[in-house]
Image 1: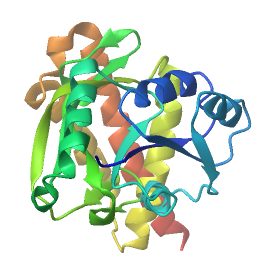
Image 2: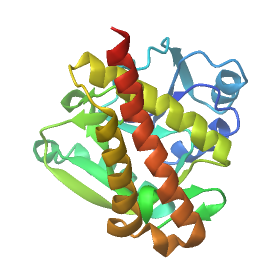
Image 3: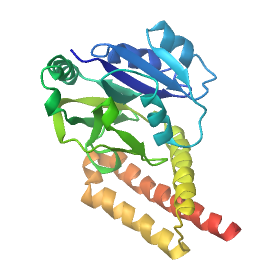
Image 4: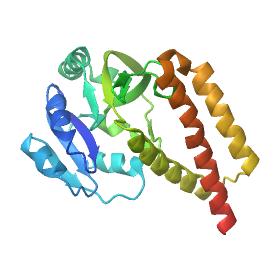
Amino acid sequence: MSRLCIIILTKNEEKDIEAAVQNARQCADEVLVVDSGSTDRTVELAKKNGARVVFREWDNDFAAQRNFALTQTAADWVLYLDADERLNEPLAKRICDIMAADAKEAAMKKQYSFQRKTVAFGKKFSYGPLHPDWVPRLFPRESVTWEGKVHEHPECKLPLEKLPGHVEHYTYKSWQEWADKMSKYSSIWAEEAYKNGRRTTLPEALVHGIGSVFSMLVVQRGFMDGWMGICLSCMYCFYTMQKYLKLHEMQNET
């Protein structure tokens, strides 16, 4: 039977970390928390609930955090979860079955994805910016690396298979939290884009913003989630414009 390490990246996650570790332990041999300098009780609570905690200083690079985690475990498989994500029972059971069978099917290894459903502002979303998506998260440890400072993605050449069940993503509890995260993500995006030689104009920022509203409200059918979905789709315009405005500001400062 193969060993599975579930990896959770944290910084000041004391509200979620206990439930996250307990949820992960239903199918993990090891729960590894990679903390980037929490000043609350995150580390204490993670250890109390059976997780192993390591530290890596935050440098605005999500992929670097995930790649660092790969060097901190000897498990055969790794599964990445955020502190605010929970495996449902069918998904956890299927993961356990894969670990039990892997030793007999070593030549047939794959990477696996599962569906992520978002719960925000006390509501489960089915459309728009927070529509359910499929995320590749379960890999043989030596087969994967991560790229991208924000909206990071895995690089894995193994065949991809979708798993039954899903994770519930308990994200934004307030509009202030949403605004704070979008500000952080837009800054990271702009810094990486500038570093990679991308440049923009003010008209382009406006066009991207308007395009994002159409995409989220119409193409992704954000209106189907009611007034909250419509508001969120419109707010996504400001996030998109903010990315390009920050990039424009950077290029004008040099």
